[in-house]
Length: 356
Image (cartoon, rainbow, N blue to C red):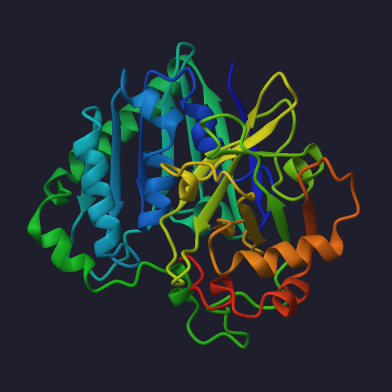
């Protein structure tokens, strides 16, 4: 029996976005594929390096076609090559053509025991398309003759245009990609309100939180339930992903970290922080994480260790605002303006926002 539904993705929404749908479809799937007009490095990494996708593609093939008419830049191609090499069952091709027409499809499909899941919509393999933009897409579960018809149509299209589908390692691909920006914001032309390049006081909110030791794997940072759901947008009983970018003390923006929410029996709620990996938990003082939730639903964060010159400002901020018990991890939500006034020299305020 066939079923279909339409889903709307709203900027900053906590659920219903394309990335989460694609990852959910990987669970129990046997194989699949996708065709996207373009991608950027953070979008490609969010899907192709996700632990659920990696587990899925270890046993089933995934054929990915991307275009390079716009957006797909040098960094994106490098990411695609990296994932293509790392995952034996991932096969990446690029639609390379010289026509005036724009290569513009966006769809994905997954083979299951029962039939086929088909996702067709407006979102590309970018952070904007996967969760930051207003998008719409349909999710259809089809079986029998209807599934066979769709499989045949997909196979026919891939066969018809095989001459334009080149390996992602083809030198012509990188040559073409160097002409692109990697940022979907560039498609907006000259809007009346130019999107900000850095964090502004109008951004939604911030969370300043002490990070507990939690054993040797303290990079899996624990949070209380109120912030796990209310700030990060996770939900108990489900596994949702958040997209984080660490900011270094020199102001550099790290690569996207697409993290599933984790719940454990002790009622701890966790997200992995790449900035903490390989670091010993300090013997004196606690690390403090400062998180900024952007309107796109993505997060910037800084992990500040006790020996950092930035630590005193955050310590004072928590001292002034924490009203809970003295034996609890201090976690305070505030506006960007409030944190900025207390932490004027933070690299968070000058770091470049991630590309959509």
